[in-house]
Length: 261
Image (cartoon, rainbow, N blue to C red; front, side):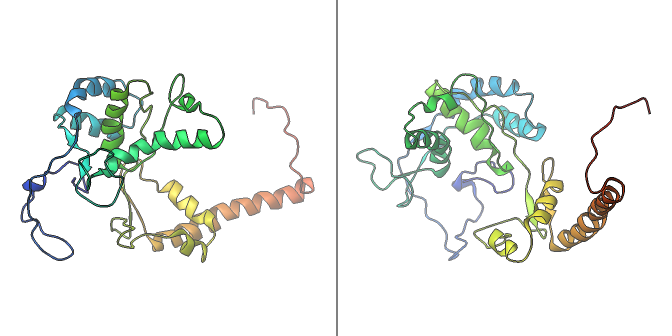
């Protein structure tokens, strides 16, 4: 129910010539009763709160502010499907909770279950007082963590709001959008059966899409491994080790006092 590229919610009736991607059939529209999260009630509070988050990444702040300034709309939180978490109300059998409504609640329920498994019911220590929560996500999930989840927390009224949502841009693979459902991904078991983990750690660290989309390609992976890790960094390590063995019997000497030179 949203654009894959920008995250904007889309009303199904606004789609131009909608068709099922699997069978090509045209969908039928039917009336159905649903539950909604009343986001409009939190419009002003959310906007005032977001304006105080000057430590957020600029792209996250810009996206959230623009989203709010366009005006929030109440969002349906139930679906007519037979998989997912059933709506726990009599008379509404056959409805399940919208995945991104119940998914963010998982942060809270996971904390409670973790505390319970250790015989400690004081899960609130993770959500109240002088604690900060960070949500590391992709940019397509910004709206759920800077608007929908904070609105739910505001509605509850006793838990801390997110301190930071450091969302990354997209990491594409060979110029195409990563998609596990389409099997277009680098699967770690396959990778580790061929290569050591450190080259991948290195490439992902220097190619992280923090401020813009970046791309992973096997050609670039090989080039950086050979030219940067093996040739440049490997040469540095070899020279340092050789110098240490030659000049200090293989032991790093104790540092001396620093002088003006």
